[in-house]
Image (cartoon, rainbow, N blue to C red; front, side, top):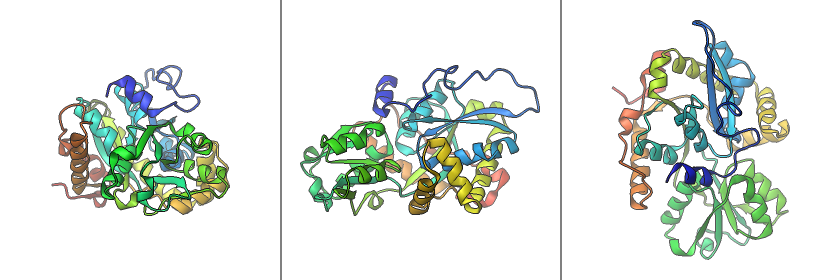
Amino acid sequence: MDRRNLLQAGGVMTAGACLSSTALLGSRGAWAQGAALPVRFTCGANLTYTNLYVAEGAGLFKKHGIDGRVVLFDVAFQGTEAVLAGQAETAATVEFPLVNYLSRGADLIVPAVIVEAHDVHIVTLKSVTKPEDLVGKKVGLIVGSIAHYGFDRYVQHHKLPKDKVQVINVPAAEQVALFAKGDIDAYVWIEPVVSRGIEVMKGRAHVLAPGLETVMKDRIYLQVTRSWAEKNPAGVPSILRALIEANEFIKANPEKTAEIAGKKLNLPAAQVAGLIQKIGWDWGVSLDASLSAVFDDVINWMKDGKRLAGNAPDIKRVFAPSYLRAINPSKVRGFL
């Protein structure tokens, strides 16, 4: 999948976001030794990335020597595009899009997992009460995203005839509208798009159970280029310290957290607070060597579906536990 197709698959970026390093991300310019390190953080425009919003909004990046700016995209893998184009310093995505960039030669490293959750859901008409009812239905999702991987695994797991479940590429911003119009019978995404669709349908829609929790767990991997990490040896540890503190802040200050995330996403703080409590994201920072098996599964799935753009990457080379181990060894497991 080339760059143009990846961007089309991701849909429209959020207001104020584009791939221009001057219009979107600003000019980095030069900075004096000892000054705060400019870092442009990219992520999807959703509550999964609340720890980034808190680190920015509560001044935690600044506290740890990072001049951080969080830039929102409609889907997170567009942020990886920005990093590879030199227009941002970090990205944060799940396995599927990361593997494709790595297979095409991207020299990215993963110093930590920064989010874990079961937060991707299938929203359907209430007439769809079990997986088998999806046969003959149109399902909207973002091709190239975690929803794509998860739903494909779901179809396989429940032995549904793949040729009779029509998957349509629909950007997150259009999913609720197309669902309400009847152009699609279901969609797969995360909050707040899940709740918004159910509200708009006024009792005619629900979250399908069993759902994607039967086939996967959503993990977000922090990514930087190897060259950036080597040129800025204090950068990655400082980012990790800020995110560890952000997790502590979220637990201790739920109201302030909801206010910060709501402001970033233009959502009411009360709605944000309710969704955070409902979903139960884990914003703990960690890295476990056993996750290489998760990547192996994703790589095999991509090979089977001819989705792998290049050669299978060596994930063990991509994991970079030394940064997290240096500041908190207890959060690193399974590495020699």
